[in-house]
Image (tube, rainbow, N blue to C red; front, side):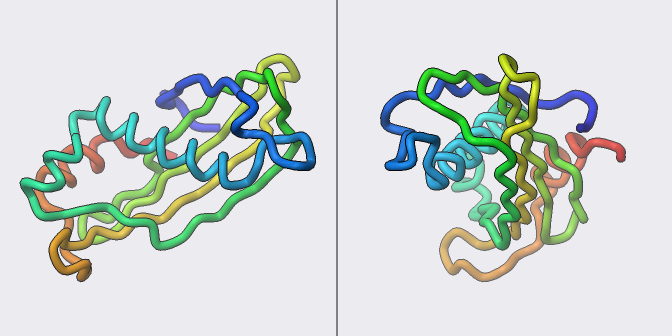
Length: 141
């Protein structure tokens, strides 16, 4: 999809499976959140940094696309990229989950984040540390 993704594996266990015998939609959202945090941590931003800066990146919008069902025992390659950062208030992350055994994309998502104050929840400008980290991690399209 884009160059230089941040990737981690997601092994599908029974806890991820719903009554249709495939991965539940909520499990995908949980993995999207986990992947975004893992990428932020790898870039050098921890939640402690968010607290020290009194800022957070909260979700404004998720666009989710489920392409193929995923089942118990599958292992997915889950990738994310920062595809937009306006250096003011918002950033966007693209996600793509691939099933290597089928060589197919099974899920993708685009998430828009907005910077807010941790103590009030009000929108706030991205602090310089966020601009430096997230802005420099943005992929060129």
